[in-house]
Image (cartoon, rainbow, N blue to C red; front, side, top):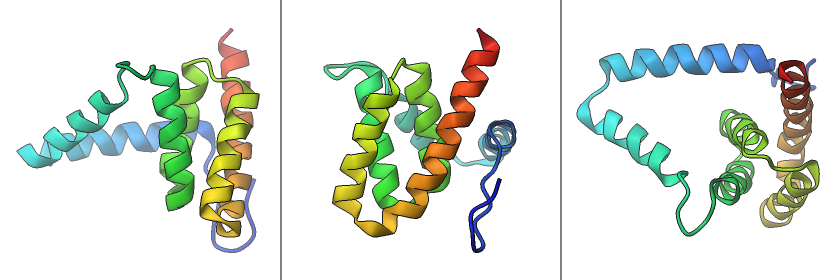
Length: 126
């Protein structure tokens, strides 16, 4: 599957493998600052006053507005794992679209394609 232009969507498996491999490499070679930032990022999405699913939906919306496809894919996967429904995800997409404007649309397309892969992966694991 690919998007027109220079953007090629990665498969769910490719995304997960690339992310895991590169995170391991970064953390093995990174400075204390790098490691602390990764830890801060992880801890930010842990349940607190807001539950983990809500935090991931917020992260997804922000990632869409910032137009970071890797971040969008990561947060979609985390939202699915946290039990977010398609309805919750599509309302989150709507918020990102309204805040970010039409430039979010290509990222929305890739987000929906990635969500389909996440659901297929989830169904295969059941």
